[in-house]
Length: 164
Image 1 (cartoon, rainbow, N blue to C red):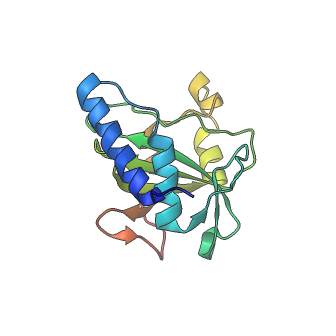
Image 2: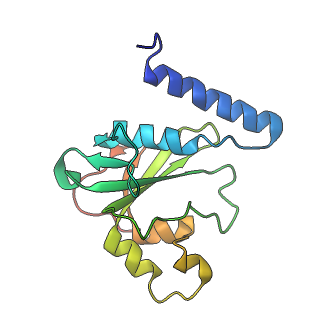
């Protein structure tokens, strides 16, 4: 057992990643781990001990109970920059929902969006671009087809789906 708690380690990882970016202008490939940690903690998800192809976590309660969830991350260093994309969606794997965790330049989560598999497939159908066929999607498009389920200011957003 480690002498450090996972919370403390994640706090330090955020600090180091932000400092590395400020110093070198490059990003450390740690945002997905931070996003998964935050999504699991904030939205009551369980992360399997052994990696499973296609999904990163399973819902523990409510409308997400038993749902297999892919978690994607994006650090927004400059929100004005158009065309920012999320990582490739694993369309050929088994999953039920995708969560997109958006973080600020300090690697602190600011918003979490969620979409079902049907919503994602529907958004990609009819698009003939190579990117769409590979499961690539812009942040703007993901926001358009998903629901905001958590914000730093409000916490978890429950009830009626939020329209964006």
